[in-house]
Image 1 (cartoon, rainbow, N blue to C red):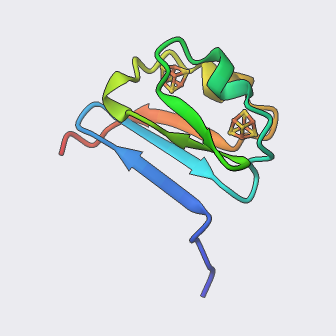
Image 2 (cartoon, rainbow, N blue to C red; image 1 turned 90 degrees about the vertical axis):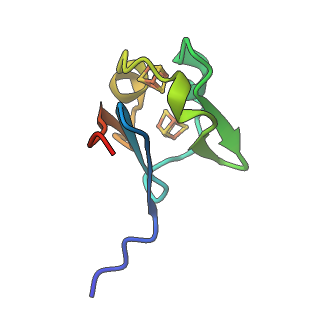
Image 3 (cartoon, rainbow, N blue to C red; image 1 turned 180 degrees about the horizontal axis):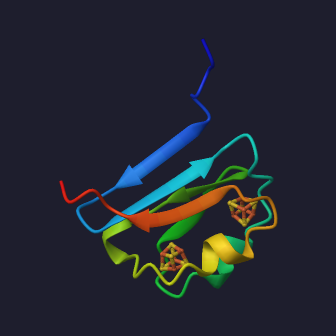
Length: 77
Ligand code: SF4
Ligand code: SF4
């Protein structure tokens, strides 16, 4: 079975942010571009600080050089 523990999903009713910790190299670009301060660094990996603050501007996903972060609509739960 494939180990997917490096995939971290954070979600609320509006937003889903998926971070691939294996691909994240800790460059902090996503954290610096996020206008809402939704993200922060925890050690050398990006993590979600406050999912509710995300406005789905997509800047983090667009700027990440390693395709390690994805933003989509939440599933409405
Ligand atoms: S921009 Fe991508 S590689 Fe850089 S810290 Fe953010 S998620 Fe990790
Ligand atoms: S989509 Fe925009 S607001 Fe949400 S975490 Fe990414 S940069 Fe921040």
